[in-house]
Length: 304
Ligand SMILES: *Cc1c(COP(=O)(O)O)cnc(C)c1O
Image (cartoon, rainbow, N blue to C red):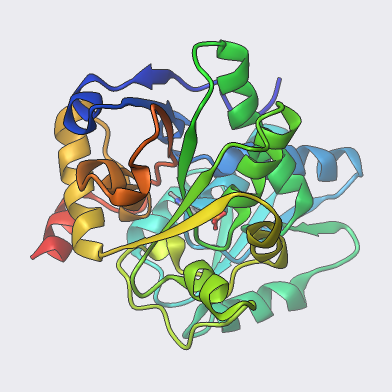
């Protein structure tokens, strides 16, 4: 039994009526840790457990850290998550709730990550939040499930991009199900558009800072794999505003009664805003990547 679950695949009536297309939602917001992350992280943790690793270490105060903590609890392996002082109480609470040890260290993620690296012994496995082929292979199960459902063949796939692990996983899933030709629309927010800016520059750039509220998309640089895929696969970039992402969170809550982070709202906003990138496709698959680190109060506060 894998650590992730087979999530619902629904055709959205309200979103379909809104754009005049078939909008299919893969509800990974309903995973045990509230996001798709457990697919890849769960798969990687199972491999490391089989290798005899005695501890999992993460430096993510977001959904990746929560997924590592969950995987450790399920596999009876202790977990240490090192997070910077900027991490919210809520995020720390969600990690501790999974029985993981939380170490608060440093002013930024860089310092927390450096401390996490310094703790590593030969018996530990370090779980990177997006740059690991084991993660991509695990994330790809999302597309396997869509293919196995046999309901439709996607004409386009919409997904959000932070460090590009989800993107790499979805492309791997499309390829291994014979759908490698299907275009992927990779969505970021302004202030976190490390992939779109790399594609524009023709090389992998690093952002000076992250200025978006979509913290789960806040990787200053995407992984090499994600950038390389843009050079060989049908991947288009879309950049939306924080306002559009937040508004999509509110509308999605009203339409489907599920609260997601702005990181996921970014993808959904393409549908709500009838973004031209979606024009002409009949069956559109939206990866509802989820996220549990933003409360409704926080989303409304940001929107103001
Ligand atoms: C991690 C995450 C992303 C981005 O995934 P990457 O693999 O970093 O590109 C998007 N949405 C949510 C909710 C996430 O947790």
